[in-house]
Image (cartoon, rainbow, N blue to C red; front, top):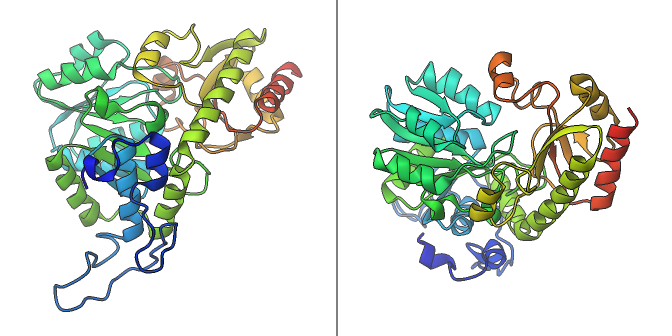
Length: 391
């Protein structure tokens, strides 16, 4: 499964629709079949057609892995049962007890919980959190024991941008590997491997699946040694997606390009509306010139994706009132689906982070996070206008 084998010279949308998805050899089915089987009949002891047991490998999952690798510009792709399962695989495979990890101080609450309560307490890893938007902060956190730098960009939920190229060079000079959570950007808008990162992680539940109907994760890399280690862990630990889940994500990838373009267009319209609204205190969106890392975002991303966070002048009370009044933005966790969602990070996605730490990082009780869907943009703006102004 090398990059040259699966259409690196083709455009993104073409690869999303065709890589790993040739017509079925047995029936001519245009769409990759759901190989809903746990085991495979062997021709003789030890003689098979490439598959033995679906934890170890499944044709539907293999098609997904090949396609995802192509979209990230990676040689190898591996699918997992969730984004956190993918993160666990990277950490458990490439690190040993006593190793030091530098991670961004603004990151998904589930990642923080995994790092702090599982991998630190039970796995013996040592974590330091740094402001990855500031290279000096990262440089100060790196030590001779640092084995991995974990970057989330754009971050969840404050949408800060980190310079993947500069941080990767810094980490590599110190012998550390770099992993980037690319979930918020999707491979359509950002390819961290091309910027110098070693590993890319996704929650495919989000934009790659795109329809809020599947939970999944992925790891992509061009490093053969890392790939072989993580693939061994994938089979040994068994946190793999089933055939139907793999098929759902693969189906989602077919429309990833067109969806991301609409997410971006709608999010920019929403962000501009919020920026100009008299009751809005602050807007977080890298596509706005007022964003502190706007120029960096333009440099390393081809688009700004569909996530917007904001606070209101009335603080927590005003936020709670507005969240009750939206009609199109449904109050729910997750993101990246075709429908618009509104999340309250402090009580939902980031509740696992202690309140003092959460608020010190800017995740206050008044912060709201929008996953801007692909509905008519005017309708989304009108929904927010009604929710904010009627208070």
